[in-house]
Length: 363
Image 1: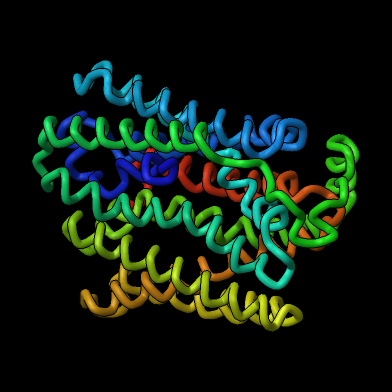
Image 2 (image 1 turned 90 degrees about the vertical axis):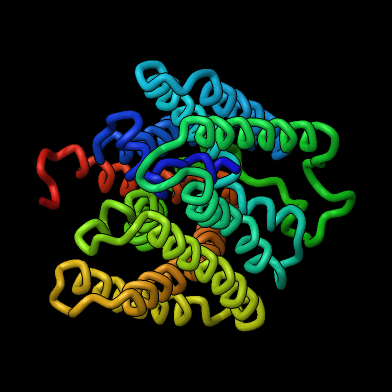
């Protein structure tokens, strides 16, 4: 739900710019406020997870998510809505701290070692599933390029209601841990928070892994938010762009599960999986670039194939990096490690979206 909110405006860029008289930079910043809020609050959130546990932390995030969605529903008047939507975007970014940082922690608490990569994959790709669903829900509810304010309001109210239901469900039942630990390591007390931060600061191998993960994943994570702008030179309708984004994300989610399952079985071959998928993803995005620059004659089949393959291979590495970083930093808590690597992810995403503030960029 948090990711679905974050990617609200990218898939309906054309319509939003007509109604609210926004520019490309406004669309970029609506996503960027979430990243900025995440970076500013992730370390306090990790400390809160360490002290209060998963249940309390997730409940707080769900409350902030519902509050942000409520603000988005107040009015559709362009003058007021822009301010409220930006505030809602900040709250949405804060609400993403625990869901984005804790997949490996959740897997280590609830699952044995031979299932953790798969469990981490399920938890981490749920974020991308939300982003993918936004590509379908947005263009279906909002016509292109003429925006219907009623449809837009219905969309916001539906998301607010859904987040409220999730908050209620979390209050009713979401235990912090299973009745019995799934492994010996799951029951071991991890290092204290301040010492964990010092250990992370000294761990050069963890820094290398974090950067290897964050540079491509951070840029690609926000790439989908502005894909309508990026593919603008090809004059693709926003509905078609939505389907490209949807198929790309769904392919990445399914491939992540497949690769994670293989890595659970072949635990010593994670490096080979990661390097191979990075090479294939890099080739796919070179293909996309050549199509956008019109070096290669454009066809819809090619742009679909290039985007889907690029997203599939890149997203397939994400759960593996969570596991590799957690293993490298052990006995530091997986929640702290997750926060550390995702802060880099968001920083590179912020830089990428700030580029849209440069006047005339891409013209």
